[in-house]
Image (cartoon, rainbow, N blue to C red):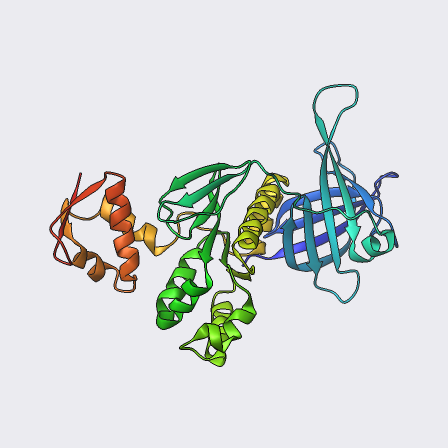
Length: 355
């Protein structure tokens, strides 16, 4: 991973006597004029973006490595590699001019301690937006309802529900009932593969229409012991840290959680940081998302772009030996529904022909 540095310099300017630079591999990512070396108790510092007009001589005060950097909506948060004065954030706001058209930017430098002492009015970073575009997989029976949203039925590469944005699928959710998840205990390897497909996306979750306690109830588990069920659920969380596993309690609450999850992501993605800063935050905040990810997509792409015009399903199993048979069937059926392939015969030796 590339190195990030925090560089503070003094300049000959009465109003903004310091220049703060975030540097990546020797190149400036963000450069601000600030009024103090560090925000004082209960205060925040107003910042100005460095402009080309500034040519004041500078003297370096400190140079500190940045060990953590994340974006939360309009906030750009970081942790410096030093024992004190190490946590801070920059808040980027857009304000409309009062006397003319257009907007201007305001930047505030704040610290964790300052926020605690000022006790600002509680405000969610992700406010939520009812007008989102939700995709529901065409194989989903009795789907959840998303009021006041744009809803579309479509063959999804992974999961049962997805949040669609201009740049592709931003989030996916796999829906599970108690009975459905319990039946997956019989073949845990396939469940791991499904969750692996979800992790290819920036945001993913498996939402269960049951309580965690239901999986510790011997009467409900029938053939499994509570100890075994607890181990399975723990393993799923441990091996798939990129996918949230939510025990919502029932269908209604699972539906509600998913709606709020999608709305929060939409709100977060709309709150834009300066382009270059957003790129760095994305890089250091975690792995870049693959919006086309998942073995479903790989099989689909192979059929459409690389396979012969006529093939059998056994060829797909040879090409993708780790793919669950259910996924292969799902790809074939979805392509057939879309009119891209047709079938002749039955079983593993049935022939598929590209249209």
